[in-house]
Image (tube, rainbow over all chains, first blue to last red; front, side, top):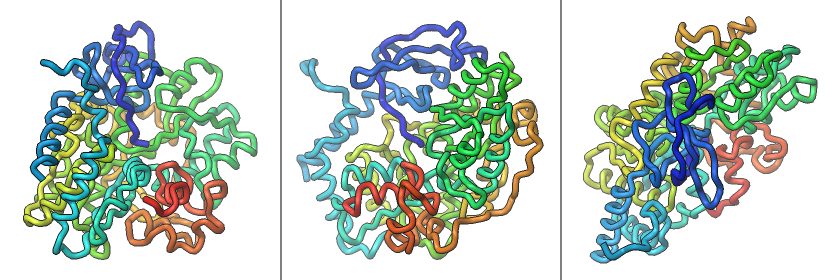
Length: 85
Length: 372
């Protein structure tokens, strides 16, 4: 139920009539891609999103932007511990 | 930088070399520690743990148990009965997640209501249900809403959008639940003796790691917010072992690429705008105060229960006789210890709720065998 897919943001547009980005808050919608599959995604729950970001998508809504820099730091720290260990 | 072709970092969280190294470090860290019970509370975690064979990578003294992490499993009989009643109103289309259809209930499942003529449709989200209401303007579309905070946030955004663009033929049966309050109640139960919590990554994306501070600070239980890849799970368990060893409980964030300490502010604001806390039944576990959500008065026109004048029981009607789901959901029994498991109770004919959902511990155990 709480599954969220990481998708790459490949398109961002302001919603005109879409439900997800509609009258509620003027949030943007766009398109996310994962493994060649493209889906409409609402960015209404995000403060900020940019093309090329990876976002976690649940029930058609992006719920977080994946912090790639943080991910890189975590992996690098583990690599270091791996070598030291 | 001279690394033009490196894949996105978030895709490295399944790297085999890191999995093996973490597994070794866990074994070292666990040395000399007594039997430890680490509980996760997320069906998606149980699925990942089985898929990656995580339990096989842990030393014998570290036991990972599945807590009540499946919102379909904890949905009470009274809500299913109410959904059945509303679904049988001729003008109604009941829209819900596929898993909800076969949840067994004494008066029958939603599937059986469907075979008796009720129009029940499977949707992927509240947005789909609202879209259905807009396209079926002559019908009443009722969204049977289950799920934890991850699912509540998009649902809240959809409901909030109704303030600007009302939809008179749309309403909801709200059977959502919140996690941190439930964990506090669970860990106060002496028979559970939990040594650490693996906290649900995507619930935490919404509510933030700080939401669990009382668990660490007041209950002194080590906590780690954990993602869903093999490296995430092992790193989280390693973190818990370090806390157990040091005797200092904190809320570690092993999923910091997605989870902030304060969570997703916009999502939390939508939830607070649309819903307020209420007491709620967790099937087989009784009433847990403050763990449910109900629509705020501004949105009461979208409350299907009052719209259709249905009475909802407030008692926990539990599970069928002999079914051990409540004990499985709280990590006190393994599915195999249930007399129905794999015999009378199978995914195609579930006796208890944990055999229904893809996130139910019993269903996952049957799918993966005991290799997890």
